[in-house]
Image (cartoon, rainbow, N blue to C red; front, side, top):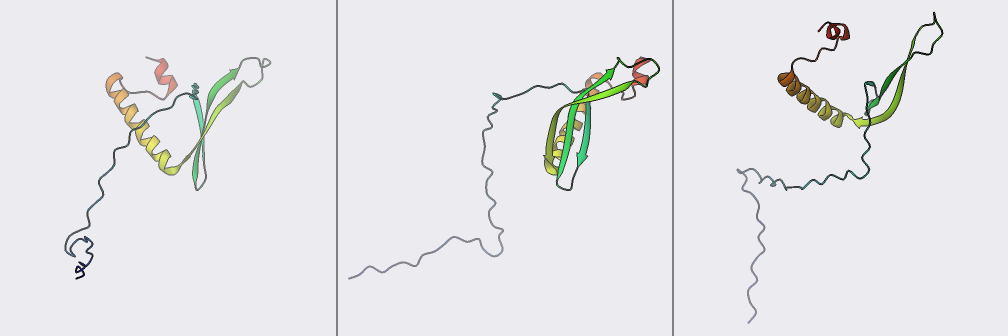
Amino acid sequence: MAAKKEPEVTAQPAADQPPATPQPQEVRLRLDEQKLRVSYANAFRTNATGEEVMLDFGVNLVNSLVPQGSQPEMVFQIGERIILNYYTAKRLALMLGQIIRRHEEQFGELELDVTKRRKK
């Protein structure tokens, strides 16, 4: 006598219950700094397209070897260009805002006007 085959049943949420949300999976982050380059910048320039934000970082150099009476020249020596999508640019902006806020809470306001800084 052949055994009676049970119908296959798949678990589905009831119509009045929302589907179960997937549990977030923990991911371990490992930083690889073997090719890390460190650069100093005291100046930056920004540019943007509809898809990307471009950040140029570099150093302002004042050319002191100009003939007398000539207009001094400031050279922006670009060392790095970083291209970000807008999502990454926004995360960077938020993170920089948090870092600066914490710094100012601990050490005081950062004055951007150089003439006001010199008076201190």
